[in-house]
Image 1 (cartoon, one colour):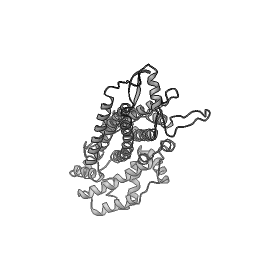
Image 2 (cartoon, helix red, strand yellow):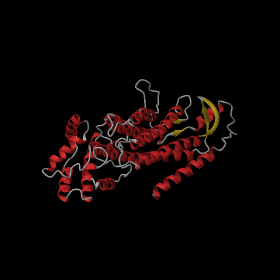
Image 3 (tube, helix red, strand yellow):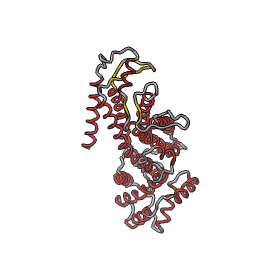
Image 4 (cartoon, one colour):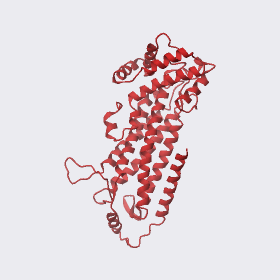
Length: 393
């Protein structure tokens, strides 16, 4: 496991399945992967001969990103401003005299962007599994407590009773919406292969063929054909990840509020303690979820700022994305992991819910919760249909 991007932050988040695809080693390794796939595509398109493709594949196969090479590449990247330059140079060295299959018709941005896309898609894929687990926990809560009365609260005050199932159904709908958008944005991420100024001149007249074969080989979308200065694909993933983080942060905030000593309606199964106050049972997982999620709006803002790209290559804006997107996805993944830990086995105190309803004079034997149960049923049907559709695909 290599989490050198942010060792403490990632491990403290719990599940690191997504983070393993976001480390520096994974990012640089994906650049090497791009070069191997490009050699395959160029050979299939007839742009390079089999000997050149074979030399490229052998160079790629023997190039492993470990702590030593990672440090060397990082240091060497300073000269050209990106890691693709030293990686391509090292691959050419390994290929010996036959270097024609390395970096065929590509520019550094092609390699870096495609590597970032590969990291993002893989991380979102692992995150999606965790999100499905959270959705199942929420669906179980909604189903179990479909008719459990709880006091509704607005503007910090008690309002009218609803059901805890309806509360959980609201959490579920918000998260499912955001998760679906993130999944779609990740599925749409494209390959980047357009050459120095985005016109594939180095591989003309076969450049578009190489492009499409490269997309096919890596399992990526082939449109837009050139997005060197059109950063919408990465912004889509970043913003939808921030939406997921916001959705789980909403749940975490509610869990913290419901867990307050004076309310006592929820309690995490494994609450955290205090170094100085032994009586405390903190909703530690929900608090950690909130902390990770709070980082994402600013990171998303940086991606939006990176939409300002000059001419045919972003000036600093492109460079700002590499760490930002990976940090945003990692923070979101940690927030998802922590809300899952918070909800798993959470204790619902129906007695305290009833006690709090009575505080404002409501008759516990005659509570009107309106269509709360119907809302739960609708949310559950929608969720079941959504996941049936995913399985059919």
